[in-house]
Length: 265
Image 1 (cartoon, rainbow, N blue to C red):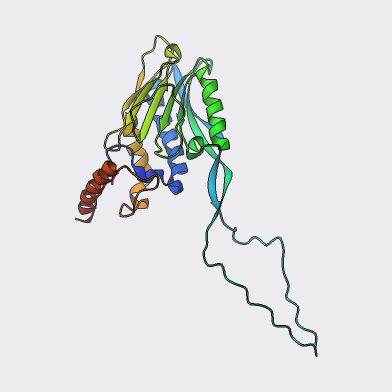
Image 2 (image 1 turned 90 degrees about the vertical axis):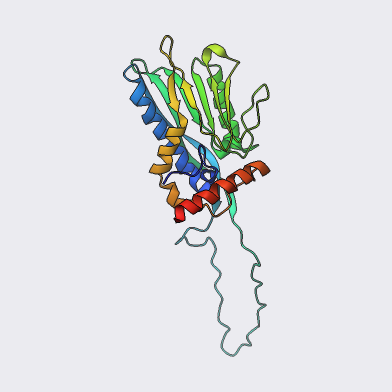
């Protein structure tokens, strides 16, 4: 069953789903492009490590670092009544930055393997202020922006701090940004509202070859189906943070009411 949303599904931003979605999306973009750019070019997945915040629990079967043994009182000795331990009234989790492997998409010239276009899908770590992941991404972004390669950014996360732009753009939950080598410092920006389909984006190659149209909405729909997200998402629950704007929340409630009715009939 397809997603009830016409474009990006905010429920996919759930931290339990995002890392898998990120890599499925990168793989689907790679396959989509390779059907259209060969033989002069090829697209490939390039792995990298990013430090994401994850909740840490005690692994099953691991022995504690310290064991406390309670001795029995010696025969004839008087047992001392120990105080009763107070149970913790609440439980929580500990978050740490842990390394995870993600993928970016790279388009290269077949003969020389020269980098032509880098396609980056932002992760939560890239947008977390003060994090190692954000600092590393901004440094990589700057290297690409002074190189001879084009850069296409997908920001499909409503939360966090977006990579900087020199001039303001319309407010939207999602953005795609394209920096062409021959147009820098100017960039093309596609703000995408929750109620809109994702755009068909131009993927630039080397002159004189024309841009390749990348239908981002078709790619995302294929990933949603391949990842079985319809079975994994409970649309009766609120979407993951950050909270939606009032008009967005009202629009989404109407959309999901119709979706639930269709799903149950």
